[in-house]
Length: 229
Image (cartoon, rainbow, N blue to C red):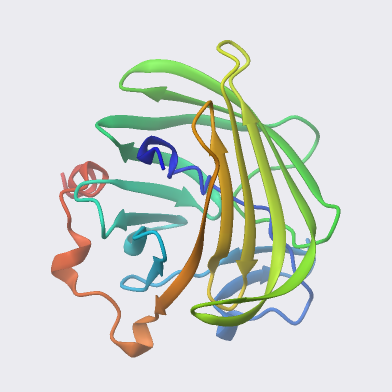
């Protein structure tokens, strides 16, 4: 896989919704009035995948959470809920400038888990100082129970598509997302002209089971170094 695209996570990211039974004990912040959700990540918890990819929560500042790659020294990304804001991957520092919905409403990282839900937004950011703009769409396709090496989980199936309208570069991710584990259990992806790929969860390490050592969380990530200044 081209590591330059792993931060799309996500991108950021992901349209998760849920039912009114979601609560803090499931690792979530749920707004019953708005029907929206975002994970309540804890510093030290980590997720390990079959292709060697591994990430852990390294820091939290307000509604921003910084993740570090355990398998790739120095690489990291920051999210506001499910929305990617900043990242450092393959010596490229991406810094968020704005995330704007293409329709009425707000984009604050608190997302819905309703099958059929759509979110269109534009993200403007810089990549090593050069301005970029991507148009993105998230869609919640439905629910599915799947079996992976880490176990059997109920998931929400979420598809993300993004395009740079200037260069024509496109990205695609399909997540099988677990509310209980606060991360994807399986992901299929393709970025630009690179080959398609996939990964599945092998292990989740929650804080209750010891989490990741503090020394492993400070892997030289420039986002963490900047926050200390």
